[in-house]
Image (cartoon, rainbow over all chains, first blue to last red; front, side, top):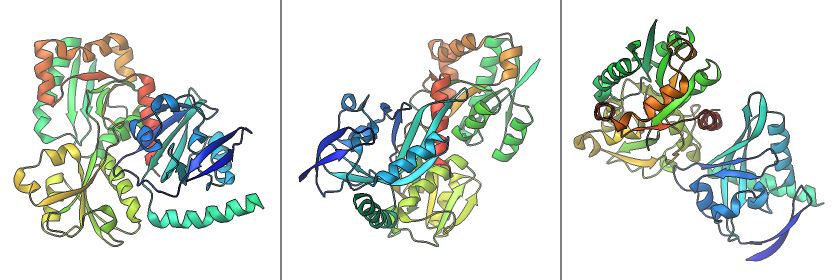
Length: 150
Length: 252
């Protein structure tokens, strides 16, 4: 277990414990959450709570990047926000950080919640990813991260 | 004015009589003439929805999306504690123990049920399987899906969990589930269309109250029993919209 300092797009920083232990994605389940337009969590289902390792009351009102793993390149999240802010659906493979420092991979799909023609928030649904795709992303994200840090 | 009610074709044949009983109950309560039209085919039902021939519908989540967003239907209720889940099964003597054991080129048996097919295909993704690298054998019903597995024609089959649970012990002894969805948020919903809202003389809130309190009367409770429901649970507009957003994340 090591401690790392994470810098977020809103310029805030957080200190988190990180380990190299993976938690397997639960079979057959969907992890569901909903955020406001600024990315703060307004709703999450039990699978979200269980996999994140946080209590529900520790998640509601927090920015979604509470789950951001340091191995994820910033460019992936920039692409996510650019896509959903343009009103489109975003799909991608994401490595998430749990409260206890362990990690889990998901295949995430994020859609804008449009009500009366206006975006009122975003819904994100994660499902079990394929190991082949995860391995591709491990290599890709490593390269992207190296470029961002150079 | 005469209205038409229909039911998503994925309902269990065991409840055909129940839907007629529900229709009679509804006509007595609303004093409206309502014709119940049942379909064997999703496509034919959708044709009639598109032609504005349907006024009330017990819809699957797929069609609820189109009905609410394109046709102006209003969500009224969903069956209490009943969500739509899918099961992937294989022959009980097969060596497959998990989805990842299934390989490219395998054959998947499905019934004509777009929702179960969608959830089933999502559960195959961890094995790198998609419609592009499996052979889909589309059959008329879940008993035929089970028979295809028992006869070793298909490697795996998709079932609506409710249909799987209702199968006979004899069939269930010959097939085994390798994964069951636990989505919990996708549900069938009872909807009313704009013509019914505008011309039945019953306001939406009164109709909502009528449906959601149905279990409180003896007659209503026995009618619900004939549908296999304990009671209805209110579905407000935002809950229905959110379910549609979630469905949107599941379709490519």
